[in-house]
Structures are given as structure tokens and as C-alpha cells.
Image 1: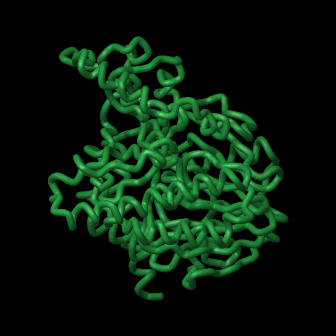
Image 2 (image 1 turned 120 degrees about the horizontal axis):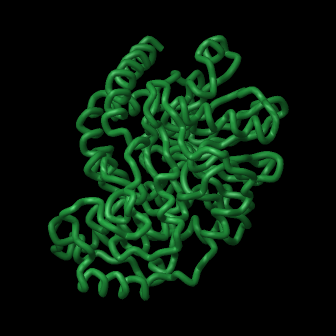
Length: 437
């Protein structure tokens, strides 16, 4: 406990001293949309329009993609309740913490030859903004307030909050909005699905640390959460933040020639990031807790998208929370920003465990990013597609390496089988095969 308290203090200091000023310097929320974005004009006077070769390449790529499959768009809109009248959220420091409106050029119905057509499709899907119902009367999400989704499970007396975003301001805005629309309820528990900052940094916007320390409001996290949060945000924090700027281009203007999306969401909020140490850790492969009348089975999935991560199943609702293990994209395995290298084979195995333990009966699947899936057949389709893609990444790359393909050649040789290429859930937007492999 003493070690965990020390880690908590260290991480809190690091987040306040590093992420605060860095977030303001990067100011993802305050980077303006380029005025010429809708017209397709380049934001830089020296910028050039796509060449005829680029246009030909983009048109050829459009013909290979399964654009006839519109189900993701239907799912992204399903359950919509309301959007707030504002698109900017201000930070306590006075800067713009979040600006969803700066991406409105994506909603003009134009194809931009400067943007990969598959990425543009993903960027439009990630424009969902507001309050959505996942399970009627029981599970809700606020989307488009930060990089991640914040999820609210309705208990007997209050809200159980899953993944309270990156910043205090965006999390507080989401809580205020759902209470305005569905009636005020207290937060009775918080769950961190894993150790990345966009899933815990806004916790002080939804709960008071005094209530956590008193035992009134439990904060639940996977075992190893504090250690890995420290490793990423303190030990390697500055280096990873600098590299993140290059990976995602967050300082570029919002434009078809600049920043359009971050694959799992639009951007990262530039607000007050903090931490409240978990009061309850999930240490076994499977553990069941009942909080405020809601039964939850946690599935520990270490070594997947994060070194400390967990899925959750709600048997009362037949709803499966996939954390960040199953989203609307295939993650990179080697992350350019410097997070721990993921194990695609273990990731595939953990999805397979979830598929056979929960996926055979689940009727709802929702996650920390992207949009939910409804209906058992659809859920199994997506789970199998992502399971098989991660397994193929491991197996085929290993096979090619054994055939003599080198580390500098693998990205030019590795390809997904066509059966997976036809599945949108098997596409990656964190980069091309160079970044995935």
C-alpha cells in the first residue's frame, strides 16, 4: 500500500506538472480549423494540391474498399438522445479544452483527395457527438467530448462511470449533460478499464477524492494499473508526449491537409488531467462484483491493448464492455509514441476467451472508443474479425520472418487475407502496415 501511495503521489505530480503545461502547449482543443478547410484549400501558402498520381491512387483505393457496407454508420447513429448546444468546452485555465466544431468540414459530404478514403470514412464515423443510449434504460454513453467515450451504467440509485476521459472539464461536462437529460443521479462507482491517460485523467470531474478515500465511492481498476500508469506518464512521459505530437500531428490545423482524426476518436482534450488512486483492484482472471444493484464480471486481459486492462460483462443486460480491446479499428502493435509493444497473439487469445465466455449470448457490445454493436450475430462477427486479424498479424509476420523477410522489408510484404480486408473492423488507422507490424 505504501508503494502504491508513493506511485499515486508521483503520478499526480507528473500529470499536473507535465500534462498540464504540455496540453496547453499542444492545445489540441485550441488548434483552429482552417477557414479554407471546407473548400479544400491548403492551410499553408506553400502547400500543394494532390498530384494526379495521388488522385489516381486514391480513386483506385476507393474501388477496393467495402463502402457498400453501411452498418457502421447505422450503429454510430443508433440510440442518439441529444447533443449539447455548444461544441467547445473550456478548460479551467482559460484555454479551449475541446472543440468538436473544428472538424465540421468532414460533414460537408465531400471526398478529399488529400485524405486516405478509408481514414476519411473513419473520421466521419468519429463525429458522433452527444448522449447515446446503448441498453434501453440502463447503459448510456457520451461521445465526442474527448478522445474516448465516457460510459454511464444506471444502478439502483446512481451512475457507475466507466473511463472518465482525459480531462476534468470534459468529464464534468459529460456528467452534467447526462444529468440534465436523464435526471440528476450521484456517481456511486468509477471503473478504469486500463492504464492509459484518456481513460482515467478526468476522474476528478465526476467524483470527489474524499468520497473515494472514505469508501463511499469505489474506484476499480485492473491489477498493475498504478505501476503501468507511472511507467507511461512519469518514467517515459516527456519522450512519449513529444513522439505523440509526431504520430498524430495534433499541432496541425483541422483541415483535409492537416489533422482529421486519431482513429479511435478526434483528439485529446487539453484540460486538467489528474488521478485518484483506485480503491479496489481486479486481481484474478475473472471476478464478479455487484454495485448499486448492477452485477459485473471483470475479465483481466493483461498484455493486450494495455499491459493492465480488463473487459466487463453485465449478465443482467447481456451487455459486453470491450474496454479498448475491441473498437472500430485494429490497433498498432508497435506504437510510434512509445507505449509498450503489444502482444497480438495474446490479444487474439483474450478476444477468443471473451467470445466464448460472453459473445455467445451478448446482445450489446460497447467500448471505450468508437460505437456499439447490437445483436448477437453482429457482435460475434466483429469479435471474430478482430480476433483473427490480431492472430494473423502475429502468425503471418512470424512466418515471413522465418522465410527471410527482414524488419525493413516486412511492411512491403505483409498483407491481410482478402476475407479480412472486406471487414471494416479489420482495418487499421494508426498508420499503414509499417505502424501495425
